[in-house]
Image 1 (cartoon, helix red, strand yellow):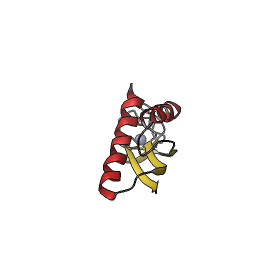
Image 2 (image 1 turned 90 degrees about the vertical axis):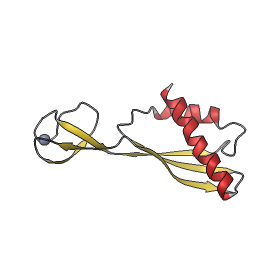
Image 3 (image 1 turned 45 degrees about the horizontal axis):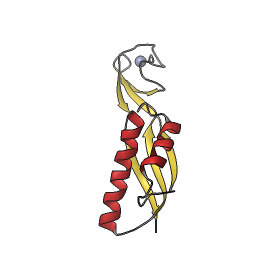
Length: 113
Ligand SMILES: [Zn+2]
């Protein structure tokens, strides 16, 4: 399951950082996820609750920030907003769009004790 592996990698990032920074409890996590990453947010919350049990991030609040999709339209030769994959260019209707942003996922900030 896609969301389960994302939840596991987020926890991995947090545990690595807990080890190097020396904190023992995480209260909140701000997670940035691109709109085009294809992540089910509710499912991710559920998975994260499950994998974070008995870890430094147990009961941590998960704040998800969705970042907008972006692409380069080959027809218009400029950056355009991409609401979803395989959608045409909002300016010219072309499908020749290279996605340049909105697929990433990163831990933006942690609130720790
Ligand atoms: Zn275009």
